[in-house]
Length: 239
Ligand code: HEM
Image 1 (cartoon, protein in one colour):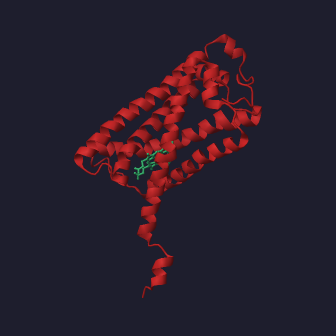
Image 2 (cartoon, rainbow, N blue to C red):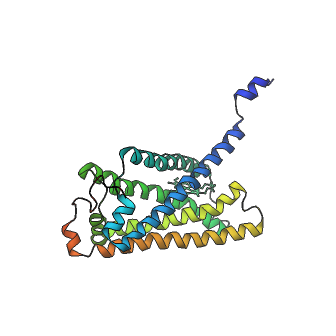
Image 3 (cartoon, helix red, strand yellow):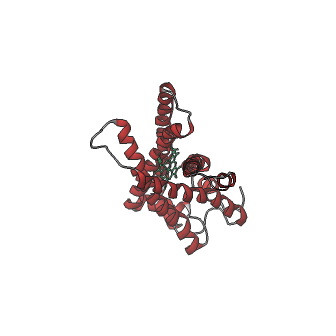
């Protein structure tokens, strides 16, 4: 027989799974969606040149601020990724039997999740960890633009990675409507769907636009000489 203390001390499995569904989904919106949108927007400063880009994207910050911002983004990313892989294992695809558009988007959401996971590992290790270990600072504008221009695999990985992130995030905003109830009626669902298409185009335009600006700048011979050099903004300078 269940006693009051039993019910008080242990949450039922359904309560636990509703909670974990909510936490995994919530972290995808805040901070991840907000941060990704901001990150893609900041990268557009590549159009204004090396100093503007380094000030917006890689400017050195106080160590405590650096650790705090990394934790605020990376911890939710790890939690959402673990949550996502668990949900990937739970799902059975039936696209062979029901080949409609919504079902294809459901499959793409999960395929893009795997692509995004691989892209983030490659991006963080090449753009953050490697330059930090080898040179003690963030990747410089000269380095990233050189790689984008001279190394086709890098360019392709960025183009596909950004495509995956834009799709996963924009479509996630539409599927989140079911989790959070903001797309409960047919009309609301249509509205959220249209918004998610718009968001997808916006994210893709910002991401691919930045890649274009970086790759274009990597063609400049003067910047190539400065490759693997110190950042344009000296360490310790705050903006
Ligand atoms: C840039 C980082 C990421 C962002 C901004 C992001 C964002 C989102 C959003 C907004 C949703 C919708 C949540 C909902 O429907 O309640 C979602 C769903 C999902 N995410 Fe992510 N995500 C990211 C990375 C990843 C990674 C690396 C994985 C790896 C497994 C992943 C796996 C999933 C899965 C499987 C779903 C679908 C869950 C479901 O509807 O059952 N996500 N994501």
